[in-house]
Image (tube, rainbow, N blue to C red; front, side, top):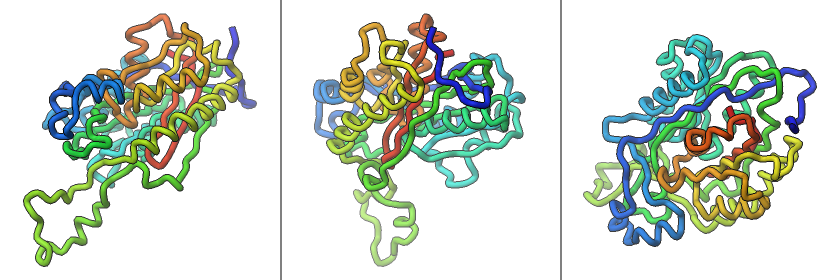
Length: 341
């Protein structure tokens, strides 16, 4: 069997297991179409989404992250005390500081280094790249990586470019030392010239600097920052540029598309996923993660949630190569080939 290209220092890493936690409320297309003057058929045709999970009012981003962490630890047969670092990718933690990661570290019983990163939909793959480097360098034996979002806190339900896409959830993975290479070199980067393509309607400073006396808020005026995107621009970029990144990730791993067991892309849009698989000329036997139909776009949680579900539905993929790729706001991207736990 082909093995991944080896590093010079002969210390390797692998993913021991994935964990997942999803929003408690299932939101159907028909529940949201009136607010955006759309239809169930239009959403399905344009995105492939039928439902999305969203957190209940009492379910916090902390709750989602901690639940996914415990699930990943259990599936990896690792205790919280054995975790040497916690890396969390999120854009929806309501506090700029302290980090969400330190709360999760405490919840699993660890006093390890813990920090958040902000790379939106690419964030989980960014975290895997950092965990891989930590383990291979000898800085850590076990690293917990989590992508978590409660995007429903940042949605304007009447906004037509992105609101209907988004869901809530958390996906986690434990990265540990390995006798053989289990995570290939990551291909990652960003294009800051497209910074405004996906993001917030305005900054929190706009609220602080508002002169509420001179400019009282009208009842129908929205001052809380919410998410929005230039959908067509993001779609074109993802379709044409991310297939190139995916191909580079395969080359860096030293494998060909026909040696893949699975493709686990960011669950942004079913049409993007289909086009990527077509461009890579994936054989029919390569499993393609399609969590988006039921979960929607969960940003940083997207890739690990899709991986977790794929392994639940097709456990025979264990031990096979998977190409996971995340891409989104920034515009940021990252891809790596991993051996599935």
